[in-house]
Image 1: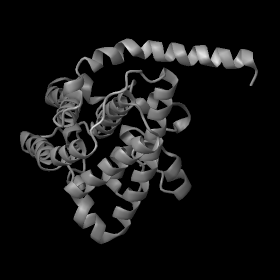
Image 2 (image 1 turned 135 degrees about the vertical axis):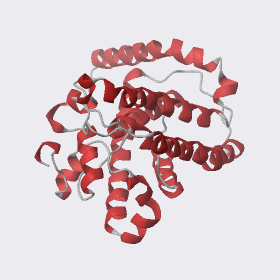
Image 3 (image 1 turned 180 degrees about the horizontal axis):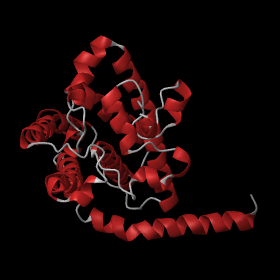
Image 4 (image 1 turned 180 degrees about the vertical axis):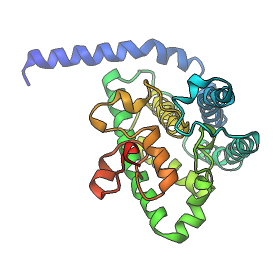
Length: 270
């Protein structure tokens, strides 16, 4: 690389870091909260419920607003309170009895100060994309095994499939074993890539949003799969088909692993 190109790259990286530095400096004023063992639980629950709530409102309005039903994959289905409340209760219960103790254990064994420098913008984007790709591959293998091995399915994954027509709050309706597996994937990936704390937060926000969107039951013109070209990303109709047919579309987000295994099925050909 020439010195001219190297200097241009250095300026680009520096500008990317400067772009995120004010945000990171503001977050670091809350360092005591960010470093608290309570923060991951608070962050996870509020982000998840915050993303679910608009879809819950849409489900309430859908029977009374015909225009909404054109975007709903199952126009005649709306989750009842008796379906919504157990899902919310399961999420709160799991965070109380599993996520918080694990967070507390991590906090007591490996406390660390937040770095003063923000990550470079390009590095943050690259790490988030890599974390998503790694998570997608790991969950694909886990998911296929749990559908092919009856004992694994009954013990760990069956709970998540109790709702054949997914809705937003059913996203985290899963067993402790499944939640633990997903948590391990997340933790290993950010450690492997040595992600900056701001990158970790960003990845978790993106990951939670994509998982909620995939289970929402609404296929809007601005849904993620319509924004990513060439059919690389499955999306809500893609994942909804997995819930109704069980033997296809095992990857949570992208489509390349299902293409390789021959388990990819288009929602338009069901």
